[in-house]
Length: 123
Image (cartoon, rainbow, N blue to C red; front, side, top):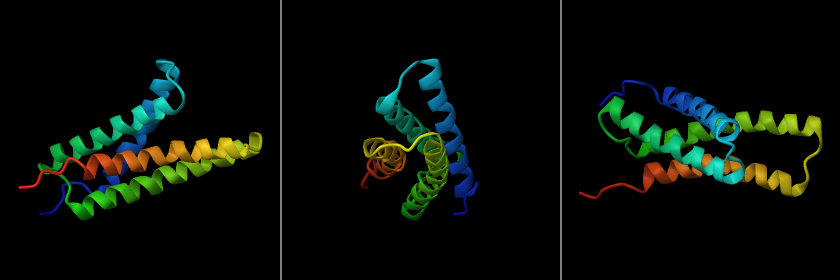
């Protein structure tokens, strides 16, 4: 069954939503740190799954699920590398700062993988 939209369009929408939701949570609602990241990652992952199901009329199959996770990881990884570079230009982050930064990044692909892979019904 052909898809109505290519996977990268879903991923671009999810990355834009993650960016906007982070701004809303951190600046608008004054929620910060890892709770804001986990909340944003969960909301974006759930929205991506629901949006895919709504547009395509079905849940993603295994190859599409892994493709979405891979593309999402790469797209956000590029953004996070840019932000990491800006951090190094401003001031060299310590080891703990780098570990926290990587943890914030990893929340997004891990939560998306969990949302896409765990709630599968066996028929």
